[in-house]
Length: 306
Image (tube, rainbow, N blue to C red; front, side, top):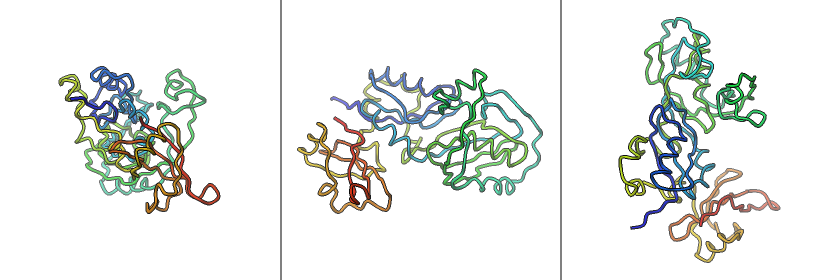
């Protein structure tokens, strides 16, 4: 039986592994040339890492843009230059007996849209170079603040000096920065001691394969776990197209919205993405640009899949 090699794999990354190391393991196990991931997890972090396979690498921007859920342990009283346990200690102070109510009153101020400065030890580019490379070489890095959204924040436990939080946030949110800023608000400062990604969009870590088991099974077992392209975008509405239309799109045809999406409720957003599907397979992702082209909505091909 032939198995597909285009799609995504859900991996539960173990502590101590880099995201790129997991990619290399999957590439070797499945003997694929094109393998990537949808959002890095630092080596000290664990949890859901979405691996992109074959044409699944074209899904990167759509998968990465989804909201994330994290379980984070913040250690108060110790500040590090990387804002996590891998860095150099900059400051260490005793932690007072902070009550859960006091911690929550400070924490809830971060819920909603906030301005956040990415850590200097991050992959954000600064003057064309990754910030962490400049920081490690001793160069000064002044990253600009960006708007992120903290949809929900729950205090799971308080066992000082550690505070465990569950955070649902927008893509691009740095939990390291959140921990450091909350630690500062609480008084003694702090850093992110542990991090586990629980979910990305509708995909959850409970459905993921442990990264340590990748080589413990044969390739067929891994192949059976591949989520196909169409199912990799469950959040995206879809339109079924005829075979003739699918073939033309795969040869560069730009379809019109009229007739293609009759009766489809596009909602109140200005721009949205749709899946075009034929015979159960993903043909393309198109972007609907509303209110353009003389006041009419138009389609723009974002990605095509063979």
